[in-house]
Length: 66
Image 1 (tube, rainbow, N blue to C red):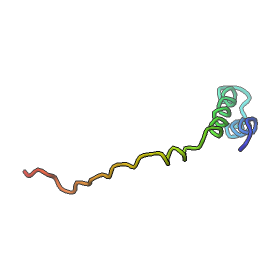
Image 2 (tube, rainbow, N blue to C red):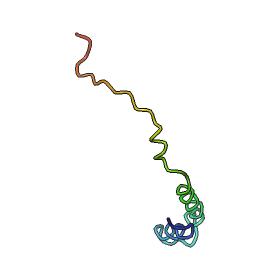
Image 3 (cartoon, rainbow, N blue to C red):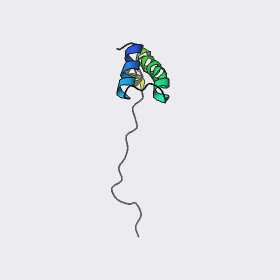
Image 4 (cartoon, rainbow, N blue to C red):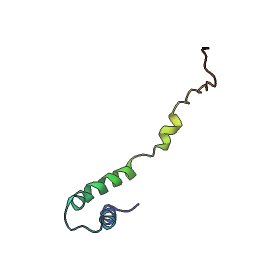
């Protein structure tokens, strides 16, 4: 995984290397959020604990008659 500075540089490069403005100001916050995503445990462990979904029943015809 890229480090924080590499992520900041990539964000700024994609945005056209702004010298000022919102993207320049928020790039470090974006990078911190991306780094934090990499540090959290993977969601795969949560999927193993998930309960199976109840089977759905498809209704082909209407139950009422007109």
